[in-house]
Length: 212
Image 1 (spheres, one colour):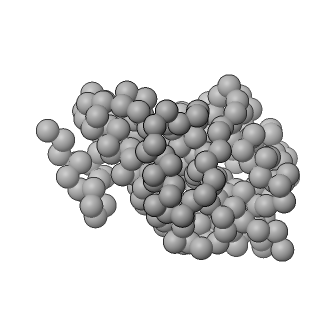
Image 2: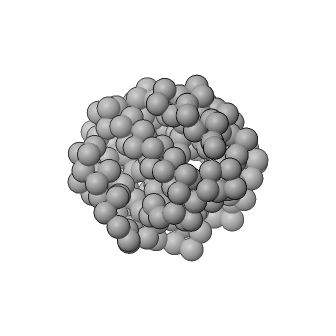
């Protein structure tokens, strides 16, 4: 049976580079600190799932030690570098790299508020059970988790990333490609200042819902 591997997509965490749409509400340092808390939370969930090796994929060579420290804290031994000119190209490269290495990749974002152990386990079970692709839709019309059993470059090229129609377009492309698709329970990410109110529901992050 092919092993499952979880790929956590992250950004090099420098103030001013992460969660830029939250900077008007939190400031550069506040947005940076919140991002690190969210990434730490995601890494904890995917490791707790216990379904396979976890890799951290950075958008560039890390310019400090923070990513390595977080990875080490969660027993993640590999930090790999994303490659490609846009999000779709970077996702395609990471997914196809891991597929070529003989594993079933499950790629997750770093800012998912309510990613659960069960999301990860269900994604692995779907791929091992014969699904061609698995997704966890987000409430804003995108998705925060994707897994593949075989390369599917058509699913990521010329996609309107960041818009409300990403998941709908992905479903259309999957049907056109004849893919057997599994969808998991919905999930929420954190992009806009209005999303900060959701933090009140998350233990340990509630203080961020009322930034000073």
